[in-house]
Image (cartoon, rainbow, N blue to C red):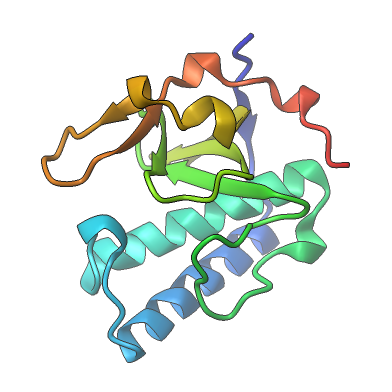
Length: 164
């Protein structure tokens, strides 16, 4: 049953997430890294993506009591997890968006879907890669950027996420 959670950041959490988002953007620009799935690489749009990604990770880590594991990797690594043991946080810029997972993502992850819009953060719930990675969820709404779009109404409540 879908049970979204409104999450409120502390000032310290907001500052740490902002610092991390800015650090990620700086590293990517210094290394001339390309945006994932033809996403923005430089400028305000790219920075916004990094800021909301870092904030989504902060929200989930804070909610689950895992903040000591935040931002452990200095460089983005394909297939890595955001939080132990196998959690990847996917953050959207609109509350009505579904969970989006790239076609080539690792099949052993559990995903937590977060959205941040107009300074409001919602933790929507979680699911497994096994449930997401089905042909029926593949869509390509922007053309040339197919991904899995998993309906947020099918997410499990955060209260059922076992960290062991």
